Image 1 (cartoon, helix red, strand yellow):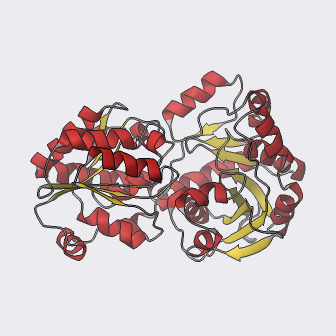
Image 2: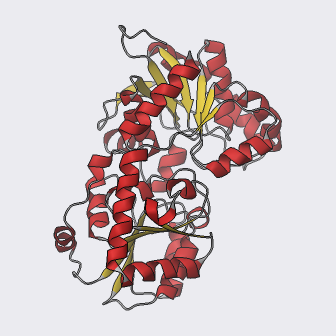
Image 3: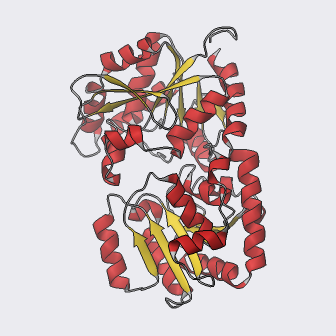
Length: 409
């Protein structure tokens, strides 16, 4: 690593996907949105935390829309973003697809970006994905350490990857896994694993401080006595448990004049989710069908709400509940992967947890918050304190700095 008197050492961050459109397209976003308007989330939270740790983050990804590599600057963070031409595979998940993903990796363009930015380490978003294998080999060829994180990819996607992954995992200098469930799975699945550190996803806590509730409600046209629950993120029915959420809200009961569930987001299941809502005929569900990159808009809704709810079946270390906690909202959620680690002490850490697929449990948790506003306020305050202590960019950045100093050498 660079000395203390030289420029900050550069670390390349590779987000998930063969091409960045794998992430952007289901959200109805494009490259311009990615560079000009996106902020927060796992990716840009890590950009901020790495800066706190004393590193210079560089985002590197591939795109199906470019014919030559481009270096752009992310508007919100001023981090360099290298975008190189990519060729995604259209095959379904199989060994053939894995082989095609490795073969189509833009090796030379990635290597050129890493050299141009003088990157001294590589950080990959998911290790259970074919792109990780290719980047681990590329980093070894360039003589720089590779690290990887867990964000929900908890299974090997083909038999061929199952044969290759035990070897490529050993090339990692370290893995950042905040989910205790995933740490156990990893050790049970692989004979040898690299060092594992509990590094949570960071959040810019001060940017998510709630505005006065009455002001937020006035701006949104919400009556002062209406009970409002909010959720936001990708519309992915199975992974996010949106079918369970709508079922739970129906069991929660209430009329349009007493309660409202606000769902903010878009994704690959928009049509199916619209059909689900139509079949339920619940007038108290308000779906804002778009993925917004406007942090102030989300903060406005979180400031106006009484509770945050999540019914996910699959999670890594989700950022959306952290944003709600930073706004002082009590959270009612499932026990999907990383969520029990966020709320390790349950209500004392800001959350009421229920088993996955438990619609009755979610409804009961929401009723408790509706009936006991003092309890809701106390749980919300505990969540805010939990985020400040454990998930703030500054706290995560310090831990990242310590780990990278030990692991990267």
